[in-house]
Length: 400
Image 1 (tube, rainbow, N blue to C red):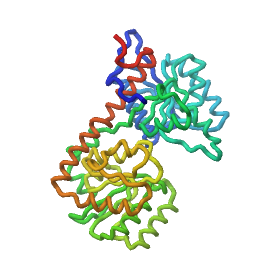
Image 2: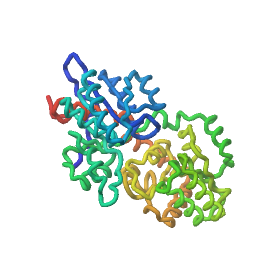
Image 3: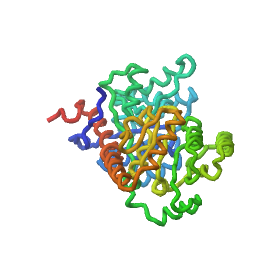
Image 4: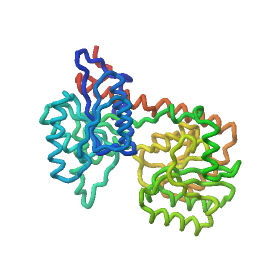
């Protein structure tokens, strides 16, 4: 069995010098890897440890500055073999100058450099496996990906990823620690979203009063399933609702054009709106009657599924990847086969038909489910527990 029940607080290490943890990732641009890194760094600092982060930089560096965490700018985002080789020496110097005890790598290219630097310096090396990673033709990239299994312990962000690691890379399950990603429950709290924020967003998106809203948040990329949702809405045949596709196409305008053309062909121009990025997702969830995750490829974690439930919204998600562990099927949401247009249309119809009392009961259940399993605090506490385990050589709860 994979371990995910870690101590809620790090073991106290009786020494004058607090442990030093260096997290290494490509950059500090918006994303789940970056958010987890910053959250853990802030938790380390709050616990009295020394937190360091090495990356090529990015706008999220400001959050490290506010948390009093030192950022070390290095070209660790590069996949150039010569740069990666030079990064070994650079990281080894960082380790020596800062008395680093643990190097925690969160992405493949920097992990190769960090692994060798940690070996040379004789310090602990840990990895977090954030996704399935493509294997390439004939599995040629498998060896490159395998660096993420070389940690003394390997953190998997879901049981789905833990199973993938064992099946694909033959990792001893005793080395795997399942720590789900955590969300900020101060931010994703229905009680903290003002009516003014909700009204402002509804006006921006020109939503009619009383009109049911379906939302699919996520990057505009094919595997996120926007086309599947559009086809499901065409099959549903309702014109008394609005569907919002929220997210950036990240410069892939051809796919956005493809979605717009499909919307027009299905006669849904008044129903489905591609609204781009949103800087107030809590308010967006509060506007929504159903949150959809229609990903055709398995989600490694599925943050929007968890965020939607945290806001008390029912979710419809695909029955693959981490969705199976992040949704209470039939209670906080419904799971449907990936790519199944008819099943998605039926699920939407069922959720939209839920009455007010049942909707309120399901909302309470969803909120409690997320708070008990997917909080930022729980993620950080379990990660610090793994750090303590490395340093003490004892699994939490086994010592005196």
